[in-house]
Image 1: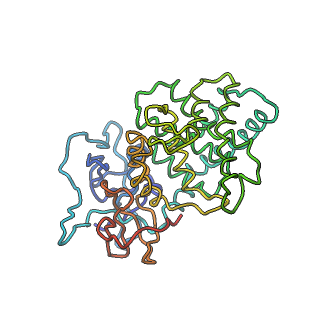
Image 2: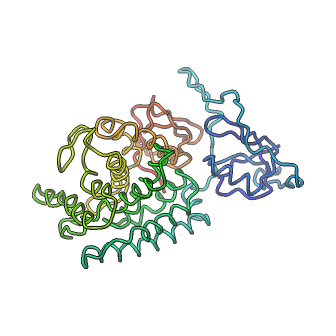
Image 3: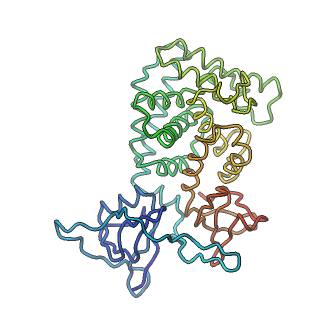
Length: 399
């Protein structure tokens, strides 16, 4: 029976699985011949399975449709028993890439943007940004107190429009054209900080997670006090101008200390540019002098800033950002927070199209866990393992 690889975002009820489907850690989700239901498709999304093969007719294109199981005859949607590993064999002579995904021809991010999930997330995101602008301006211009419950509810509404960490990263990547020096970046950092907190502290209390999320949202509020001609300068900053930029941490801390907020929020505003090796500012603090929440927000802040457009440069390729974190981040950032975040972030770039330094366009089909910035890329029928093809790298993603 012919099969065709289809993105999970494009699956519909009653399609028929052409193969057994496993999670990324080799747990069986369901078997070949399973008729897809809404619950099964949701399970694929929850387990971050980006594409599966479905049965198609003799033309190789038209999906065959089946009937769902009768009531009381549940499909096998998850089997937690261990299964034989299907990991790729990377023998030097002749690697076997036969089990790597070759997703549907449609650009992955185009599929995401066309999904109902993204449209709902996009609308909620922009509505929250509009509210944030009013709140931030009233705080700075009129010294109005921050209604933390209200703005937190707005952020939580955005979070509620995503299913898991990978889904949030997909949504934010599709929002990259909506850059803003303060507002969009602040909301992005709130979402990423919330995500990192859940990953590294799965038992964190709701109260602490709220504080972390607010810390991410308000970490850059001090930039409202920086003159636009400095903050939005397109050329290189002078030393004096950079010193002005640095004062945003003090401004932010002073603003937030005057509010009825958890003191950790003001501390994050002051310390999110500190680095574990003492190379940050304003105090040159070292590892154990920096609070856990400031360390988390530092990672979220750096990742979002580097992967987003700025007035003085275009967005940096996420794989270059991940490489930077791998090269120097292990001494500058808290490793116990950084590595779980990078391992999650790189999974969000599975099945996306990328432009290589060879001027070829390919698709990321596998992550190399030893070097997250150097995945396996499929170009036509050729597979480039970038941990071995050291002269080739990804210079941009195609979104």
